[in-house]
Image 1 (cartoon, one colour):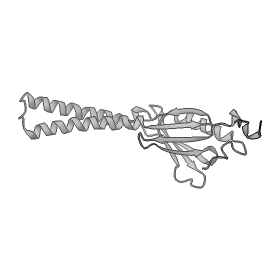
Image 2: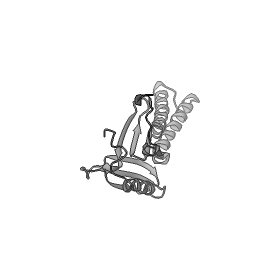
Image 3: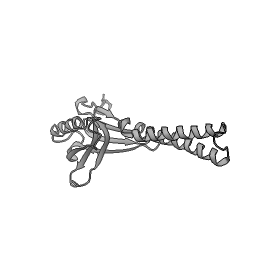
Image 4: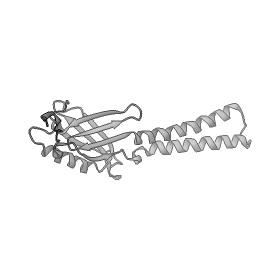
Length: 179
């Protein structure tokens, strides 16, 4: 048996492991759901009123009702699309944001490249236990490199990331990967 016939053994402790996957909360897009539902109901009411001749049935009234119906559906689909196609991934090596359905785009930052992490809450988000996590890269401490928007319990997520940052060993386990 030659040396080339021996399979390479990968140390399971040096492999990247998934820690958690998070999506934005639907409640963050509540305005779009409510506004879309209101537009849909207004359009439906308008068309039903025109068909019952409560208002004068004309091309204009049908068009306004149909446009309102379609706009309402588009608002709801757009909000749901944003929730379904955004994924925040924490691994033992990095933080990633994956967006898109057909054209998937992934942005990542390794833990040794993180300069600082902040949480940001809009006025009503603290009550809903949600907010944004802003991750800054070393060398550019003014502009966030990644923003995890509308996540549940952002302070807990920051704590998890900080623990990974403090547990980095030299040389890093991901030194073989091009950044």
